[in-house]
Amino acid sequence: MAKKIVIDPVTRIEGHARITIHMNDKNEVDDAQFHVTQFRGFEKLSEGRPFREMPSLMARICGICPVSHLVASAKACDELLAVRIPPTAARLREVVNLGQLVQSHALSFFHLSSPDLLLGMDSDPARRNIIGVLEEYPDLARAGIRLRQFGQQIIERLAGKRIHPAWIVPGGVSAPLSREALQQIQSEIPEMIEMTQKVLEWFRPTLGNFRDEIRTFASEPTMWMGLVTPQNTLAHYDGMLKLVAADGTVVNPAIPPASYQSFIGEAVEPYSFLKTPYYLPMGYPEGVYRVGPLARLNIVDSCGTPLADAEHARFKELPLEERHSSFHYHYTRLIEILYGIERISELLNDPEITSTHVFANAQANSYEGVGISEAPRGTLLHHYRIDDNGLIIWANLIIATGNNNLAMNRGVTQVAKAYVKGKDVKEGMLNRVEAVIRTFDPCLSCSTHAVGQMPMQVEIYDAGGDMVRELRR
Amino acid sequence: MTLRVLIVGYGNTLRGDDGFGVIAAQRLAQMLRGVDVIDAHQLLPEMAHTISQYDYVFFVDAAAAGVPGTFAYSRLEPVVEDEAAFSHNVTPARLLLAARTLYGHQPEAELCMVAAASFEFSEELTPVVSQAVPLVVAYVVGRIKSLNAVAGK
Image (cartoon, rainbow over all chains, first blue to last red; front, side, top):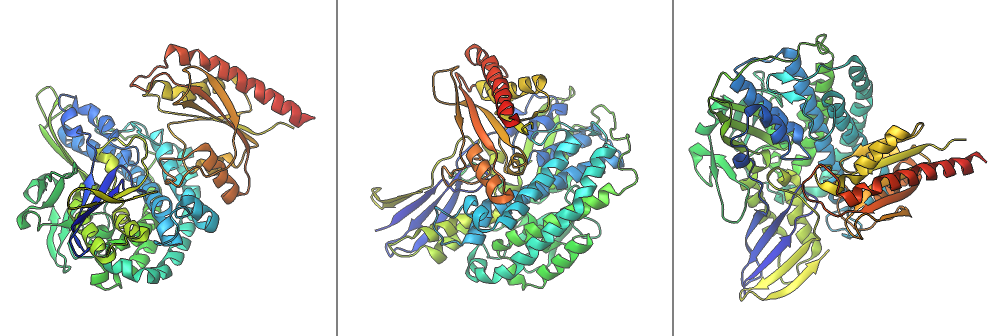
């Protein structure tokens, strides 16, 4: 008799979601789906608002990555002003965007995924949490706390507060960087680099313990997308969109952000509130692509900073087939932390970094603006249209996590088929189905309100709709 | 000897009485010298490092249960209440555990809570919870004096 297994909610991700696994009469997995069960609707509620409010308003989309939305939104508003912001303002925006990257990646790797990586996918769920990590791997736990603190303090020192800062504004930033804040950040960089290198030295050899997960965790080849510099290095603040095919050939080397609608379509599925972007020329659902750290490191020639370049070269030594595994989001997240710290250091060493010329004053000069940046989880796009009074008449947001929606759905099906078998569904099997989602580090808070926390619940139904088994934790 | 004392008031000031901890902490920051005060939207993992550097920590928060406006305080112990992730769900007890485990020092701590009347959208406390702010402030100020008196003997 056919069955349906429901994992609700998926734990250790940002936001709420559930997974359903459909099984056939032979107790084999037929299909699986990733459902985002919340709705926020910022695209509609922004209509009628003055465009200058948009960065602050959009930052409220998420308490984890408000800076990412501030950056993309402010860039869209710069387009509405039709100004080129002062170079120091652009550098400071990049610094704070990278501070966000470091803290977010640290949160994902150390706080959300390390219990699986350190304690094991099949370990006792009562111990497989951050408390277990604190007790058994205190050095790594301290590194996670310190790296997150470093990123958060960069945001606080530049933007005034850690959550929902209003420092990034259309036309630049609202205040220059103080010399005191500059020196504080610079003084901490050597410690952060050393700490990240130690974590990489520890993590790299452990990959051998996860051969099965690397083989089965959303490892089916897809296209990659991300921003790159003209030198084909990492570009988190500004650049051109690059698309690379699953076999490594370049599909589009430099798509101007303003023409994204010629290349990206957006589909809607009845089972999820998360939109499903796809590569328009290939159609839906064939046009699946991935974004985020794994995509970024797969499409660039190098990172652009020396230590991260060396680590990126090691990553590129892996066979292309293996570099398609979403399990390597973890590895590439660590490499990007290293890059982020190095790049912050470079930007802060610019002699003009404390310049007070950080704002370009202008009125709206254009009816339409597109802002694009790389959020920790991938390419983030804000697109606004305004009327003669500067009021928003239309907004479109393509959130980083949404870009990965097709790949996440394929991933849960792949890993469910590999691990969920027979009548006796073990907790470790279901944890892997959740863990494949965690590799993407989806930020569902970007499209939902996350209030409260439910226990994990798994229900197994027969074809008649009767629950035949229930697991809770 | 003067104790190193930290006050951590936390909550969402856009959700009515949930902002109680922040408002009480800000009031205490205006009144007290030699005491560090943090007002925060929520507790964060990195606060484990911060609190490990103090002798005594007061956590000030709103309570979802209880008769609105009533004040209760309790000593805190470093325990694991459940197994949820250490990101959205940081609690004072978890921070104490992390401080002890990772940084080798767990401060004495207590939790001061006032039962909320409303968590609806508002930037102001309800009258009944607002009236509790001076009570909690007076309690914390008096408690710090007595703690320092004992420590100085």
